[in-house]
Image (cartoon, rainbow, N blue to C red; front, side):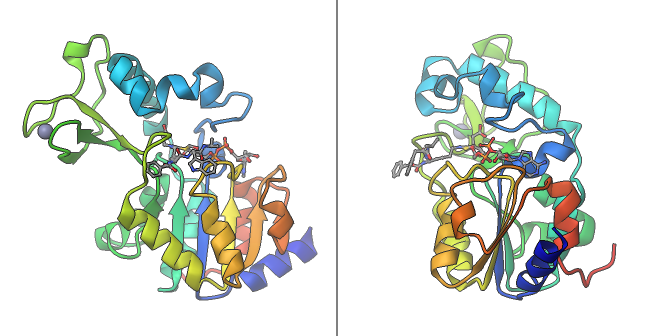
Length: 259
Ligand code: BV8
Ligand code: ZN
């Protein structure tokens, strides 16, 4: 393991680098993964909930699921892996954190080490699939930060747009929906220019997110994977470490920033 850690540290000292994270990085913060034993999907069928058709069919049920998840995540804090990644990416202008997660924990971690600008400016983490704590209007597409508890007891009590009064939806990307152009371009630009790519806590099944690591590898980046299980990316990783993120990520990221 130690030789793997040393090799990973050497690779991740590159200034031009991209990190791709999935729900596994938030497990040690208490956020359930999608496909694990206690995973979110186990209790609910994805095609029942995280799709536009599900929302059109039953917006109350979909909002009930997101309200439940928001309640769980609201109590969660960034763990040592989120914080080490924030310091690592803020230490060098050429490092980008790209996440599939909608829990907002990477942005929270960035806020701990930098001012609001860094948490929301060009160095902010890219949230490919949106955020549990934003809502978007289904009519005029107005977006807002939305952290209030949701009353999903009836369609009438669901969140309404403050601009036009139409029904709001969670501002996340559902299966079958395109990702935001700006987020996609930012992620793949970072991947194409990367000399190193760290992949943490993702089963690498969801596209196009998983391709961020593949494009980085094809562009010459050496890949470091941190995941207790192997994944489809393991075979292209230079180093694949079978340990939890919270324990390992702080040990493999060179840190210049104190905190
Ligand atoms: C699109 C937001 C098309 C919602 C999510 C190409 C090939 C194949 C399929 C497709 C393709 N193109 C499109 C598709 C279909 C689909 C897709 O990929 N399906 C999969 C399931 C096969 N993709 C889409 O629909 C995407 N849209 O491409 O649009 C299009 C094009 C043009 C015009 C119109 C349309 C949109 C996908 C986005 C879906 N939204 N989330 C919400 O959260 O409610 S995805 C969801 O899954 C989350 O974001 C999650 O992060 C993500 C991926 O899952 P993981 O993060 O990997 O989580 P998982 O549980 O699977 O794995 C956890 C891992 O952690 C495990 O490996 C485990 O071992 C590890 N772990 C556990 N503990 C730890 C740990 N690791 C480290 N430390 C620990 N302690
Ligand atoms: Zn509106």
